[in-house]
Length: 114
Image (cartoon, rainbow, N blue to C red; front, top):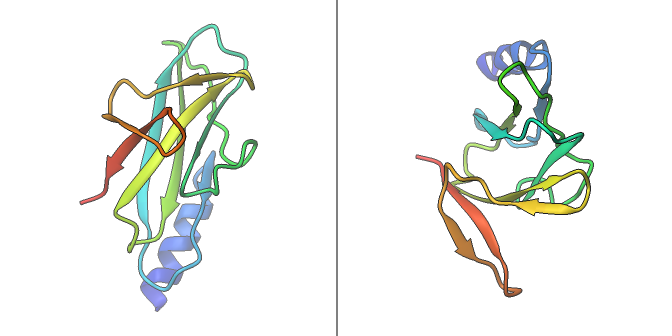
């Protein structure tokens, strides 16, 4: 328990880190990255944040035009479905991970956590 508490203290001290975790096991840290130099705002929405917009915003762009967000998810989560919302209206899939059909005729990215 002390190790988990120490880890959470370290995580909360990282600038830009959003912790999405409420479990008892050690969280898994993942980073979302999207190259979109012309974007004004990018957020990632998915099953880890209830598909809520304005919940997980990416920071950027950096000098290379990349946006990123690092989050912690519960250790027992092994499948993340997500997509990016650019400038509040454009849905963009992550080119780094496979896309799968969702249940509504669209696609989501799928990331498996080992």
